[in-house]
Length: 223
Image (cartoon, rainbow, N blue to C red; front, side):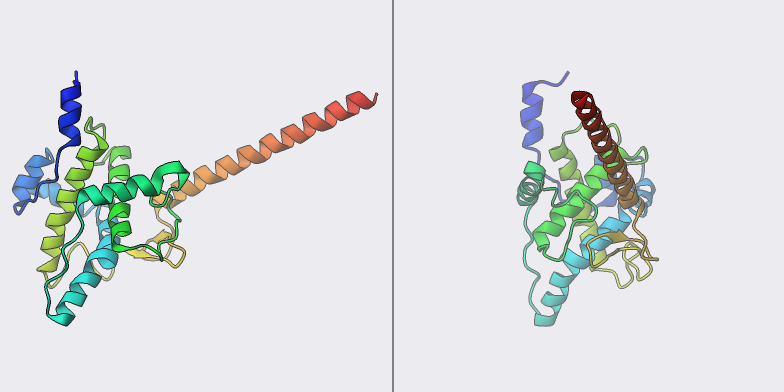
C-alpha cells in the first residue's frame, strides 16, 4: 500500500538522462533492447515522435547548423508539465483533442503535445508501455522524457533515421489533424470522431424527446 512518503518521492522524481539503450530498457522494465526498439517502431510511438521531431527538434537543429552555433538548450520537463496542466485545465484541451489546430504551436507546445499523446495512448492501449501501470502521470512523464531525449540524440547523429523516414506517416495536415501517408485521419482521430458522433446523436435524441414531451404537455393543457 502506497504511503504519503511514496507519493512525495514520486512527485519529486526527475527524468534520467540515459546514453545506453540497455539501461533505459531496464529502467522501463523491458526485457531487452529489441523489445524497446520494437515498441519505438510501433504506432504507439513512431508516428508521434516523427511529428514532434519535425516540428520541435529539426528546425532548431537546422538553424544551429546554418549559423554554425550550438543548438539552444531545450526546456526541461517541469516546464513542459506546466504547459500541459495549463493547456488542459478548464476544458481547454489544447493538446488532447485530436483535431486541435497546431499552427500556433511553439516548441514547448510540441513538447507538451508529444508527452501527453504518448502517455495517454500507452496507458489506454493493451499493447502500451504503461498499460495498467501504477505509476503517477509525473513518473510516466519522466520515462517518456528520458525516451525522447535518448531518441533525439540517436536521430541527430544518423544520416538515415529509421524512426523518421519520408514514407513515415508523420505529418500534420493544415487543420491540425494527424494523418497517415494517404492523408486519412489516424485511428485515434477516428475513435474520437466516433465518440463525438455518438454524443451528437445522443444530444439530438434528447432534444427531440424534450420537444416531444413539451408538445404533449402543451396539448394536454389545451384540453
